[in-house]
Amino acid sequence: MKRKYGFVAAMLAVVSACAFLFVRLYGSGSAAGGHEGLRVVTSFYPVYIAAANVASGCTGIEIVNLSEPQTGCLHDFVLTPEDMQLLSDADLFLVNGGGMETFLEDVASQYPSLTVEETAGGLLEGENAHVWMGMAQYRAQVEVISKLLTEAAEEYADEIKENTARYDKKLADLEKQQEALRDSVAGRKIISFHEAYEYLADDYGLDIVCSLDLDEERQVGAGEVAEVLKAVREEGADVILAEELYGRGMAETIQKEADVTVCFLDTLVRGDYDLNSYINGMQENIKRLKAAFKEN
Ligand SMILES: [Zn+2]
Image 1 (cartoon, helix red, strand yellow):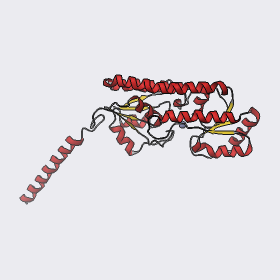
Image 2 (cartoon, protein in one colour; image 1 turned 30 degrees about the vertical axis):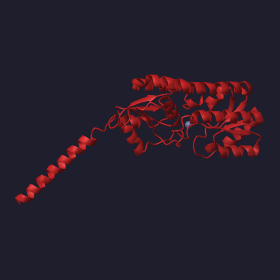
Image 3 (spheres, protein in one colour; image 1 turned 45 degrees about the vertical axis):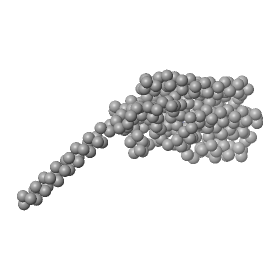
Image 4 (cartoon, helix red, strand yellow; image 1 turned 90 degrees about the vertical axis):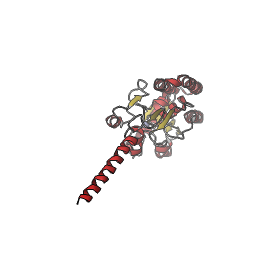
C-alpha cells in the first residue's frame, strides 16, 4: 500500500512540474507576447493594403490581415478561430469602422486590452462605410493609418513618413486622372448597383438616379427591375455601374429590356496582396469608366 501511494505522489510531482513548465513557456502568451516588434492586424483588404504601403520595409512592424483577401466586404463576416488566434497576439487592430466590422463588440469583450483604431472615422458620407472608394477620403484614411503606425512605432517615424509620401503621390496622380475624366462626364445620369459607387460617383460628379445595393448573394425582386427600367426610360440614365460578382445577373436582365451600357467596376475589397493592387484596381476603374461613357 505504501509503495502505491509513493508512486502516486511521485507522479503528481512530475505532473505539477510539467504544468509549471508549461505555464512558464506558454502562459505569458497574452496580447503583445510571443513576438518581437509590433504586430498590427488589419480587418480587411483596403485597410491592409494602405497599412502595408505605409509600413513597407519597416522590419519591426508586421502587418497581418484578419480576413482572407478574397472575403470582400465584412457586412456579414464572422470571426474564425484563426482570426481570434491572430487577434490574441496583436498589439494594434486597425479597422475601417463606420459599421463595416460588425464583430467589434465581440473583439472588445474577448480582448479588452487590445487597442482598436477606426481609420475611416470622420470620413464617412452618411452611413456609407465604403470610404476607400473616394480618392480624397482614401488619401485621408492612409494619412490616419500613417499617424497611428507612427505613434505605435516611433523608431520608424522617418521611414513611415517617406513611405506615406511616396504612396500618396501615386494616389494624387490617380486623382488628377479622375479630375480630367470628370470634366467630360460630370452631370451624367447613372444607375448604381453598389453602395460603394456613391463615393466614386461623387468624385466624377455623376448623378445617381437609381441605386440598388447588391453587396451579397440575394434574390432581386421584380419591383427592383421595374425601378431600374424606369430610371432608364424616364430619367435617361444610360450607364449602370455594377460589380462583377453580385451585379452581373441583374445587369443582364436589364440589358434584355433596355439599351444601357454596363460598366463593371472593382469595389477594391478583394484581390492579391501586391502593394500596388489598390492603385492598379483604381487605374482599371478609370479605364473602364472612360470606355463606358465613350460608348454612349
Ligand atoms: Zn460593402
